[in-house]
Image 1: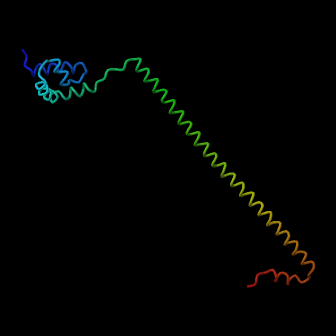
Image 2: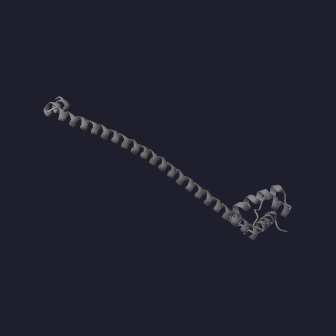
Image 3: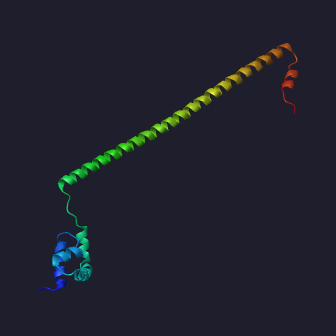
Length: 154
């Protein structure tokens, strides 16, 4: 009859070959050894077979086809939702930029209108002053006195 250590190692290796983690509970049920004995030898087993345990824990069964298809469909839907949100955000951003440019254009047009009005007013005053000057020149033959009167004093 095999010793407790061999029974425990054998059961743990069997469980490991089924892609399951060999826990103290599983090994104890398989060997009917005492909890204390299984715990003692499982510590040793984990040290001796740590690479095999790590590989078994990293191995995964392939997904069943219906689940894989559902996951793929879910992923495709998620991509579409993300793409739609991205496009919505891009359109919203472009709309905001256009609104800002529109407001800036309106402000520029108002400024141009204001400057045109000022220019027209200035031109009007210039024409009035010019007409007054020409009228004054006609009335007074001594143009020098008018010119000296308009010129700033040094």
